[in-house]
Structures are given as structure tokens and as C-alpha cells.
Amino acid sequence: MTASAPPIPSVPADAPVERPAPPALPPSPETVEELRLKAIKLYKELHRLGRDYPDDSYGFNTRLRRAFEKNSKITDPELLKKQLELGEHIKKEVKALISLKKYRHLKRAYPPQAAE
Image 1: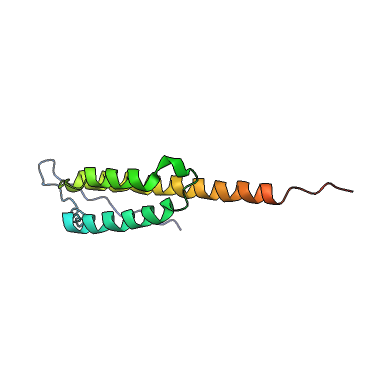
Image 2 (image 1 turned 30 degrees about the horizontal axis):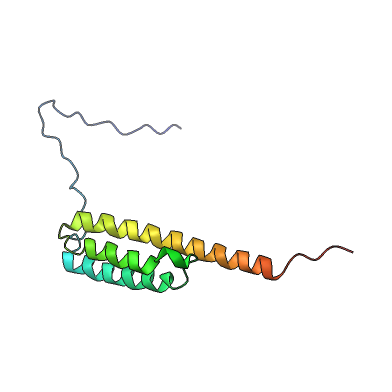
């Protein structure tokens, strides 16, 4: 006993093709005000991280302030998002530098003991 496949319905060549409905649009893009609030939050986080920046002579917080002041007049949401992504990348890099500084300090403070 073999089951036969159901017949394939024939469609005329000039019949309109039914297409599925397009997916729902993503939520509306963030407004400039929402992006500005994110920028302020990022500034505060970077400023706190700047307190522990490994090189005191670099003037991290001064440079940070100048960079944020320079970009404070941006009103294009796409450009703001791009700058926020750059700021997030810088935040990760600063965290890595601080972790490396702490690791090196511990390495110097507790030298390896010789095996006896």
C-alpha cells in the first residue's frame, strides 16, 4: 500500500502571485533626545572610568570633555548612533587598560615563589 502525493494544483501563468505580507516594521528609530540621554549616561560612565586611567599625564577626562563638547551640536540621529558606538568601544578599551594595570600591579606585588 503506497500513499500517493496530492495533486499539485495548476496555476495559470497570468494569475497574480500572492506574496506574504511584509514583516512588521521595527520600532521607530530613537529620537534625538533619547540618544542625548544615552550620550550623557556614556559620558558619566567614561568620566568615572577616567579616574582610574593608567596614565595620569594623558589627561583622559580633559580629552573626554573636549570630545563631548565638540560633538554636542550633532542633531542627526544616525551620526549620534555612530558616535555612541565609538564611545562604547572606547569604554571597553579603557576597561581593558584598567584591568591590565591592576593585573600588572598584582604581578609586581606578589612575585612568583621559587619551587623548593
